[in-house]
Length: 207
Image 1 (cartoon, rainbow, N blue to C red):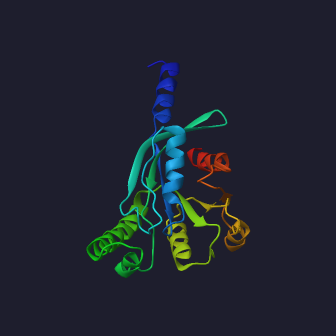
Image 2: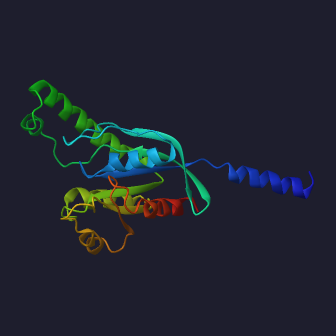
Image 3: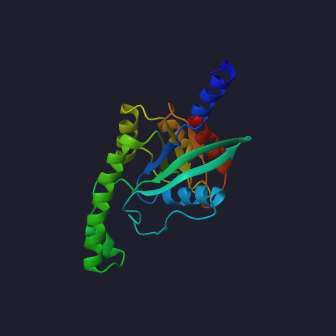
């Protein structure tokens, strides 16, 4: 085979490498699905999942394969994985207090617990992660520290997303101070504020 033809073949093999998997992790109700929906709406035209004020609306991994975004003229393709919210405890009584009937609350609690286990198992298949935190809440939580520790132990690249900066009581600087060793991107997924900064952070994983 001529050298030039061989070179073109090699280039073709590398240019066709599989998309990496990007997982969205975090506590319940921090805005993971809102971020996933924003990404999918911007680049695929359709939302990924439903959003609710009741915790654990997402109780199983939601996937959107081959999402292609364009950053500074470069196209990046990845598989987006919206993970169930991680919690240290799931109590059906909390759902009852929010107005769910007893049977529905118990079912939701069982599914939420299963979803947490599933999200942790998926760490084995994630190439990079966005750890989403509520900029209005204390970042020093057991959930945040545990997720971050698991990502670091597996050497999974992670960007911390300080979400909900559109709210008056948002304090994203607290998140930066808590985790100075990591990149922190401040956004409002609801309003779309600084979403381009998030896309640039994602793009670095494709290099």
